[in-house]
Length: 372
Image (cartoon, rainbow, N blue to C red; front, side, top):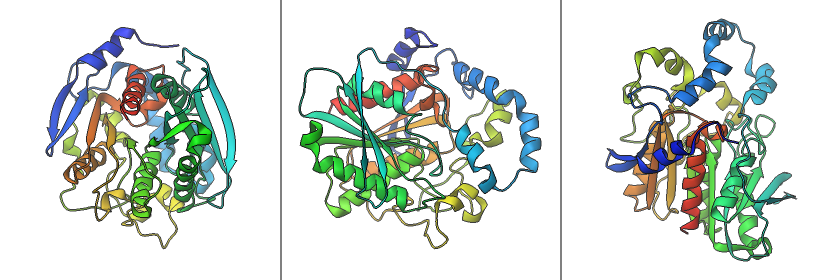
């Protein structure tokens, strides 16, 4: 089921432009139905109005006296993600197993097209977003299933440990060991060991970037592609020379300023660690935000990392990190393709079937996997 026309997909595919950002070519995906700069995509805006924008006043009142984040955690987790649609046109097989290599019990789902047995398929190992404290494999299940069909690939969906019950480095270790397990058992899964991509959205993008750094340092597993979807690659006020987060980097139409400046652009904005309650739930007190496994932007070297597909949204505060990380990778000699979806906000991928951009994102990821 789709709530948009096939013409919107054609626009996203064929009416792109290229903008140089700090020497890196960023492919700009248009906003179907909205050509004016600084405006939220109409489909995205309609979803916002239905779910929370129309109640901004009461939300602000509630935010004034909200309880501690520990008490709100169940509500926060319940609010994450967005109910999306299954767009598959072929039957997708789903299998489930549990891994314990990291010391935790980690659920591993895998999706692949139901065809005659086929060996040496490419693979994608995916880590869902959710601020390290929430999110779910179920939110991204339809995304994983669609990519499996489009790329004729096996897509693994990792149910890693969440903070605060299991803070860093539990989730990171879960994800690294899941990739290593898949790599070591490639033949059993019917995949090509030389064509394993890893990816994730938001916090999952952070994990994917960090896992690539560890895999390079450990010499295993071999990763063919990293797919970083609006990733957080610098925590708190961690930074490097040349990186700067500025609100002026966003072109905002006056009538959308209340929506965008009310929180959507605050993601990725540098802050003291103790000012971010979600970060405090994820990181132990003695954790160093400059650790590259926490803030991949601060790695000593990005040389010899896997080719990268980076995807950002125009009205997402993390976009500044996304595009700067593309610059870091490119300057280190890594092959990079960087996309920016105009009019979109953080976590738009979750709205598969509701906005054409989410489906186009899946197509872009699948195309990158097919090219391995």
